[in-house]
Length: 143
Ligand code: FAD
Image (cartoon, rainbow, N blue to C red; front, side, top):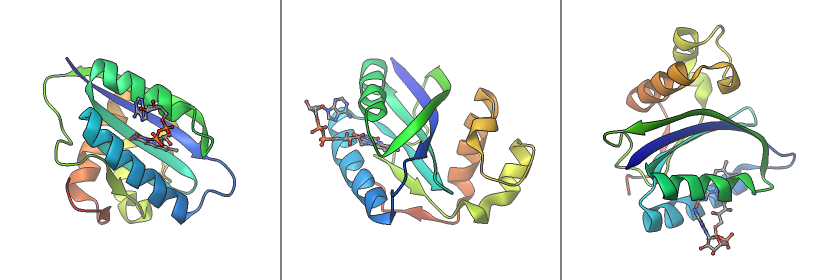
């Protein structure tokens, strides 16, 4: 059975571009192994990540990620059973420079700032789906 889990978290102090590269590299390596697909967004010290795959593997991966000292304040925003994957081309897509997608925040949130904590489970799911279609910056080839 497939599920999609979405959460937000804050980068801890001192997390820099190099850390994001490390996180993406290890994510892509592990996620291929566990058949996890998804997307990671990072902007203004805030992470928004969506993981999809088998229920047990997604739950284990999320629990594993929660223990990572490079972020805190993790908040589960959405967890749902799905009939098919949305991000099947990506072991972990990466969207940065979210400032270029302010129109999408305005569409789904109260303001133009990237604040995933303010999104409901429904709006965060719609926001991510549209972001992946329109994002100006998606790093890394599909894997
Ligand atoms: P170690 O920490 O050395 O592994 C310890 C044990 O955990 C081993 O037995 C290993 O088999 C097991 N293990 C490793 N990876 C997983 C897993 N994914 N699920 C269950 N058990 C596991 N890491 C990811 O793998 N995927 C992500 O999508 C991901 N997203 C992240 C997003 C953010 C915002 C942050 C801060 C970190 C993210 N990470 C992700 C990194 C994660 O927190 C760990 O640093 C990383 O998984 C460590 O991998 P490792 O192979 O060094 O495992």
